[in-house]
Length: 218
Image (cartoon, rainbow, N blue to C red; front, top):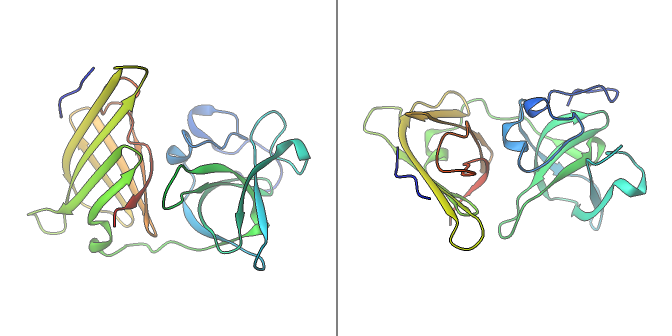
């Protein structure tokens, strides 16, 4: 351990959410730990089509105007999706630059693809980034294994900064890679050109998490 510094389908019946949170919650802090199968999806429609995100507050998501957010996608945009909640699906849009947008999208506005069962080992290898968090994945000396070096940071006010790091080897199973160092456990899922990371909150100082959607640096 590195040094630590100080959607259930159909009706709106409760879907399997994270830590027994309300089933209608769809948030960036919860998305990586969702128990649903992650998939890629493409926004459908003709050029110029705008598909807005919908919130998860109060009685949302619904078609009611109060649930409709300003953020929207256009035809051809790619998103990651997880749980369904009636006719909605929890979605994460990760631009090449800038912050993610997470919220509910209408299922019928997306074309949802399947996931390759076992990505080639080369797909994992590289330097992956999500905000200030990084995952450096390379081939291990042991055949078929990968070595992961991760660094994460949480910035509070002023000089209040907490960090954490982890380094371990692991064997990919289909599109999942789970690595453990002492108390720290991080699960990675490779979905297309994205890695979804979810940890057990034991990988660094207070508030330090590896959770997020990572893209490979260029």
